[in-house]
Length: 514
Image (cartoon, one colour):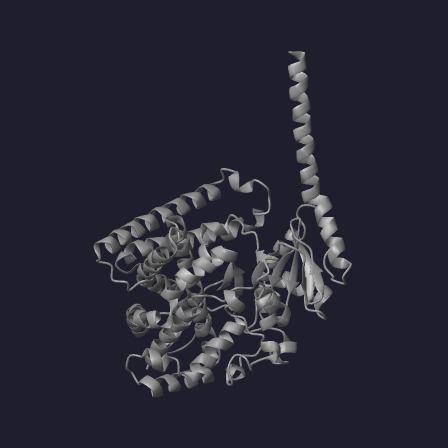
């Protein structure tokens, strides 16, 4: 018996020692090795502080910035990205690269367009998607987080659903949803009511994605939209704790609710998918919405390649991604366009003149929407100044050389799109001014080094960009046909990053019928 206890005690001691060594490597030894590797090549950054890294400073500076009033200005970096701005001033203005620590992981912030393209063009397998926080898996997945052959398969199956000819067929859905919106606004404008366009566009784009993705099942789609919004708030509140090992397993109220929402969303999606698969077997599917197009493309892939298509769980993940990407990006683009055009009445009038010249009061057509030069310039300039996402994150999997620096495995690369879009070296001294004429000759001629990345770049450029731009153009055209607008006196200019760039206090607008 004594021998048995001795053996058990020895094994327990070995396990504790192994765990201790692993924790020491995670919290101390590995971060210090990575720190030396980066500094030895001339990169500058903050000093490593065990376990928490720069997280406390990141949260503190962000909260301080959120609590201060901001003038009506498009120079938003000090408010929405104060930590990155301070780091760039201290360490990285010359070479456009600096690094800091999110927990025990070094994150290199790259704000050079050439290096960003180099990272996004990588096909060697040396750079992959950053290890996705378990939090984000609650509402994104699918093609966005896949790699290698699996990504190629997902992208190939998804491509037909987002082909330009398929999008043309969705224009009536877009129009019907937008028409409901402007008719409601017409009644509110007649009563002199202010309208918070942030809330309105959240509802509009949720309705559009519900109908265009799920067609006849749009009521169930609306339920997913409501759950998605609740999940986004919960995730944003949990981000400061995401790096703590094991935190996700604690039975906190937030963790419990996030898991319950995820389970409910999956249940709704599985029910919709099962109904559609039955319709396809019976030959009653209409192939007019994204889900039908996705399932049809997946079936075709199975016929051609055997049992190698998307699983049901993978289809669920793609549907969750439809919501986050399809609803969030377009609603924010429309919100900031309304805010910016309220600030710049001359450009609002120029856009309206172009729309009325092209369509009068008639329904816009697909082909004519693509010929609206002024509206397109405005849209691009708003995407530059108020990029929905701050950047793109990647993980170094094998030692790789970027811009002359060899990054060892374990380094996270943050491609700082917002900093690039506000860089005076690339856009000129008037970088923080609203000047749509920058894009008069197209996106590629608008800046030095082709520094415009609203939807990423390379082979992984956002598959849904045409969907988002078409919806935004149509909605703006219908609004300009019916209304002029300006900012409410209650509007407080407060861009704020909570997963994406939102107006912290909403976006109240005053409408006038024309």
